[in-house]
Length: 310
View 1 (spheres, rainbow, N blue to C red):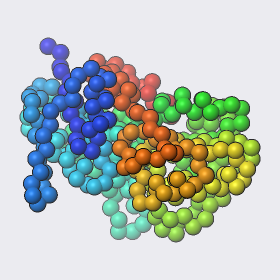
View 2 (view 1 turned 90 degrees about the vertical axis):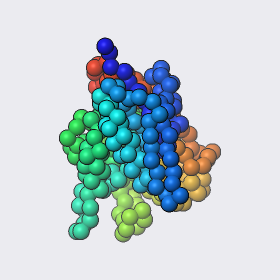
View 3 (view 1 turned 180 degrees about the vertical axis):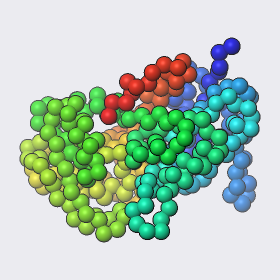
View 4 (view 1 turned 90 degrees about the horizontal axis):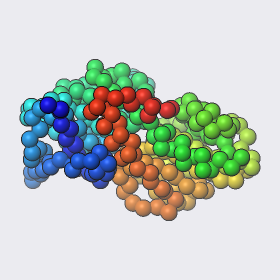
């Protein structure tokens, strides 16, 4: 008998999970989360998962309850005799803690990987990790998807002959250069220095953006300090417009206010993280089609390599 696939969702990503299940062609599985008065919670599957491939969708952005809810759901599925448990984590939280960048700090991404494996996960599906090497933290298969499969078609609409790709910092150069090669356009880089996290001390532009339509690309937008400062700097250097493509709309602290006040034309993000509020400058593209197609290929043991563009 063919193995059935059941898709469930944690509370943090329920809207995206509903779209993924609809695109896949099955209803989203029934999960109830019981909240206790002290803040403790307990998820429970309200339908059988015995012998099924269980896919649990949950982004693990703060608060850490989102991560722990995912861990509890994995454990529950394992104890309910699921055949295989796949954690689809559109936004993998704690990914910025991928190494010891100073003494006496944790490697949070590795710790999260260890916890997921200890809970009983058989496979990980995620998108645009902050650091590619996090895939190596797991002893189970990791399907690392890229938003480039969605962004690339959108970027082509803005390529009217004077487009230039840009990286907000040196770390994003590889990603921006990949887009630049596929679109056959030039590349500019912002060089920034920080005195502490989330605070930029100074920024300069490497490359000529005068008379150009600039597209900034990054894996996430957190406080939007780098993004808005880069956009304003490009405009000062003579750029005609600045758009930004960021996979994960973390958008914490003063992010929305900064985006509204900046000279950025548009910020285009995906729905791996639901927006906290609406903004006239922010547009959301869904990753539900991509995830549902990859899940279908995975269930049918078909290749998914075509989704690894950048």
